[in-house]
Image 1 (cartoon, rainbow, N blue to C red):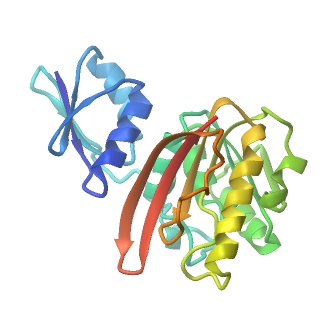
Image 2 (image 1 turned 180 degrees about the vertical axis):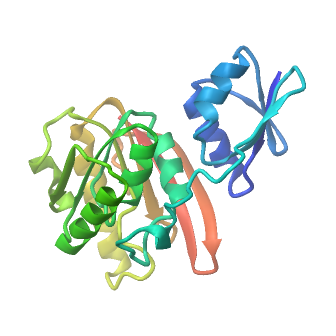
Length: 251
């Protein structure tokens, strides 16, 4: 039986990532996951780009772990167009993995953290942002890493249904910029999330996922459009003033 040591940030979230990448169910005991019926080569090829797997132990006594940082040269301050609110590459990679898709759209792409990690995972990436300054930062960063997005456009994500056809998007992966530092009231922030999540539903292909970070201060009551299947909700404590809530939805 194969055994996986999980990351300490959130072990339930780690398990969700592993099960998404392997497309199987696992058994959890403490900080380890257990499963069988997959050969070593298959397990490594599917998990080598995981954001949260620490180490893999195989039945033959061998083990595997990433010997070097997969994010070398892509940390926030390594990027030519730096922005202080940028999502760290580990979280961006995790979200891309949770999308369960080879094609992702980030409707709040900012300076392109999610697009960059998605591209390094071999995914087709597209991004929009309502702020022209962020689009310029995204262009600079994408050019720096020699990434050619399918789409990069200044556009308001709340009007996303005017830009894309129904059933045309494989997955949506985003960290909307309505966080703790926003001057918008909680009720207005909640309405913005609610509107975006609902408007996106018809655009996703059947089985398509939305992976979104929602501020932990927002109540989830009636926030999620009821037609979605809610696959998971996980909190990741960052520091005293910030806990990121990862929500995974499926059409």
